[in-house]
Image (tube, rainbow over all chains, first blue to last red; front, side):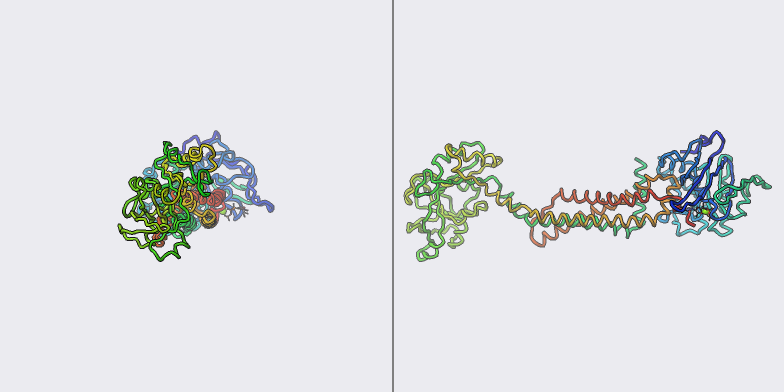
Length: 244
Length: 396
Ligand SMILES: Nc1ncnc2c1ncn2[C@@H]1O[C@H](COP(=O)(O)OP(=O)(O)OP(=O)(O)O)[C@@H](O)[C@H]1O
Ligand SMILES: [Mg+2]
């Protein structure tokens, strides 16, 4: 089940949008994304910024194989994901990608451990191994002791950390986060960003959609969007190589 | 396989997280199944005593009667004299007994009761020694007519159990009754013959006595009682030919238990009606499942979205919700079956019925509940599978 370097395409990109457009609606058409090209490289620590409605979340959804483009292709490990059956695309998504959302999206009737384990289901992993790995991920985000708690018993910051544990328990090569700190106060936001920082590795790409310019400034690569198009792709140089 | 077990676990977790709702949607299958089982169980149990009586009496008695006047006197239909011997030769026949009807005899339990008993004559028949064996009933008092009675043309009589009651006959009492003024000694009382109730009010006398006293020409029987265990139908079919080699149309054959059997059949229109009611209850329950689950799918769209984001396919999501529906159907069906059986027991107890539980009905009703829940769970499951994950997740 481990994500392996065969996810890499010849271009070296983990993920590649090629002429991707996404049009919503039937009669009234909304061009959420227009002919976008983007390569997400291993080791990328990237932010996507832009005004509301510029297509950031739409692009993240496409990068995460949660949505299909109206035209264009999404290549992951050299495979055009738009051509795959739902079952295969879902498997690929589960193996290669970890999501974090602004609203945490924990399943309310499951414990923290249950929520993290959900990411390991249907993959032929023994119940015991699922549990051990989920515990490990919870410990990694500092919530090992809270494994038995339900979302309602946890603060927003804690819930987002559980969501983070769930995103990384599969050891994905790509982590996609849509406003992960949007619902958190400064302290919790910083805590969560610290964890993201600790997840960085040369093999892995971490992508944030954010309105928060401070967060955007922490990243190495900043994509700017406007009206469904990428209008800027800057490398940002920091004093230290890690975003601390 | 492990994937399926995980799916079952996920579905059960989803159901137990919302216990009240789960119980509510289970109410449909519970009501449907229990209604069907209770309705059919009750109507079958109401006939249960008839059925058990039938089982007790057996269904192997055949009554053969003469249909025309061949060999008869004064227009009385008679079978050939050799009839008993011919029937006795059949391998499938265990017992055969011949009786001769003696019409028009006024029987009186005592002098001075003439008026009443002439108006309501008591049948008198000449019966051979094998009648009790043929109808599978013993005497409750005294003895049956024997060879000695017959050989001596004795004026002895056995009376039916209802006649004994009517005559206020005491057990082993020495009693004389008069047949057209001739005194006969009552030597026994024949127990109740359920399959041939007319015998319960009959006076039996020896055949030789009948010839001597009542002008019967020979011992040509009016009727035969034939016991044929295991091959009743077959025997009944061949009897007319065997008895009356010339013209079988002169021989009437009847299996008295057939009538009881028909009577013990549950009224089919009522059954259809109750089944229809149960099916409607099940269907309404199914619609309830579809309804509540559809709402549930909307409420749980966040859960569905995140599961999709975590790599669960559309098929897996559909399976998860379908399994929830199936679990509701199976559990509801089983609970409904238990409730239905309990209702049948309670009603039978109250009405003093013999409990009759049709296992087939119980299994079928439970399976039906499961099928209905699958059918009606299909739509919400598809709906869950079709949800666009991004739309449920972007919110916020
Ligand atoms: N399901 C949909 N149906 C129709 N239009 C949609 C749908 N989803 C998104 N849109 C439209 O597509 C455009 C891009 O939306 P998107 O959510 O990607 O923007 P965004 O950059 O993430 O905005 P925000 O910063 O507010 O989250 C918007 O105009 C939005 O209204
Ligand atoms: Mg957005």
